[in-house]
Image 1 (cartoon, rainbow over the protein chains, first blue to last red):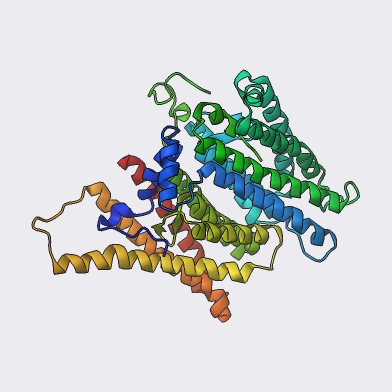
Image 2: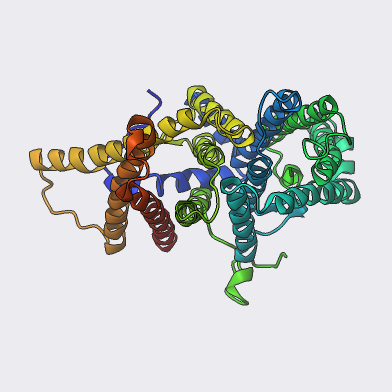
Length: 249
Length: 214
């Protein structure tokens, strides 16, 4: 039904090869409007890899926030290792696919890919094996969120061609700055909660509903950010938005 | 970490721009994930540590959802990223995330989903890329024989083996649901991790060939 259909090109049509054609066009900032128009014509959803990853982060935190309530009430069990492990895996995918780290954008060199891969392996082990990595992945997730949030918000407003300029420019760029600010600011308390293990391990520190609401707000802010980035890129604002898309998570 | 010419061949390879496409980056991750999983399953079977199968299956499903959402890849093919396909990807992502956070509740559902996905992927690929073109070629053979470059031939062979392993892997995923009595039998215990490791190695090898083709 949705299939483009295999062609007679045989093996070269396999998924390992075909997508590259797509991706090269996806990552190319020029001709974004043409691509969007073409995608619209074909009835295709023109979401970049970056927007997709941000949407999945949003889903992760919204679902986590919703599930905190029954988990706190003791109705549902909770797996802290695989929750934190999945978070690290999503962060590592951003690093491997785009070179976007929790502390800012880097050129995607092989060393960056290697660091992302190491983080992915740590996250996977935490997901697969409960117990030995609980504290490590929790602290790592907390550190990424707290220090990543602080670092990104500072970069956003110190850099001349980022936050300040976009706020003055108005329109979608202003919304983008607001969305980034909300995400970066919320990263800090969510990270602190992760560091103190307030969700389940030390229930006295923070009330369950408060944690749930915070996670929900954090998740929703990702959806807003994804919309802003999608809108900004489809309006072809390549230079301004290229640097805007450092998000983590 | 920026330089004037990121593609420059000077300096350590570690600091050169990684020329990985998004699909290759996903496959690199998938290959490592599968190899790691294969070895860890051995550790589990020898009683070294427990395995969180909810988390494991949830992570595999989240990864599948990312391939659907970002690349339009599902069941071994590349599809137009319609809203329908996006909806499937979102449901997969949500199911996988919940399975990672809450252990136990979705394990069997995801096992069936992933098992079927692997079987259908393998069968579809073998049918559409091998059987149909061969039958068509016999019906109306080309005037001159088509010769593929050796690297493409090797890629074709590796992908075909990968798809066969994928079918066996899918069947293995379904066995605990369909035939629970087989769990614990030596062939099952030995076969599953080996299959997962082979799948991972083949995936990495395909990334290597794809990089060379670039």
